[in-house]
Image (tube, rainbow, N blue to C red; front, top):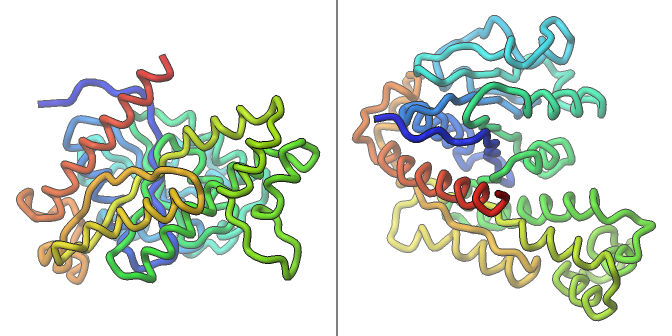
Length: 312
């Protein structure tokens, strides 16, 4: 049975560094959505190391994101190729085109604007690793940011760093240096060399105590910022708690509340498919990862529905 129609939504899947299975999770989320009857576009926004085409079957996509950047096609719709999953199209990032690793501002803006015009129920962005501005700007375009981590402490730290990077980037884009709020936020957003570490939660408290007409803008950013946390490769009973650790640290030092959307267990079927270079849509429907991602998608769609109801 097909799900009820959902208004256009953008999901971005990211994390700190590589190795968390972010691209695999992006692909499986897209496959799951399509099997639920959604029209999905999966866009490889890892501009310097695209690899989604290898997870979905086509080895050498005939058209890629670079064709749009170089204006060989006029829209991202023309760069979206069919996959082996009905309802799922892929826009490949062309990993052999180094010019896309650091697109110019105009190129990036053109891509971001074009993403909003895609014809789909859900556009799913697979982000590059790290926290440079290009990655963060793609993340902040999305209605939902899904942060993938594994139970290892280094991955937990990287996930927190990615959430922090997104929040700081959003604040810097809204609170300009001429704003009366800037002196309060500057010690965290742009500290002086050698200055002691100041957490943004303390800066926000200082801004609240000072008051002012722009304070509500700051409060709204914090209220609306709820990144989704997805734990991958969970094994032991305590592994899913990794998401709670990220949420607790983000609450303490950033003053924001990430939302856990579930966990995906270690899956031998998935590992074999990757090792054998088989498209991920060939995974058995009863595989642990497939079953877990169905629950994750249901959770994310409920969050989308709540967002749309609040905006209505």
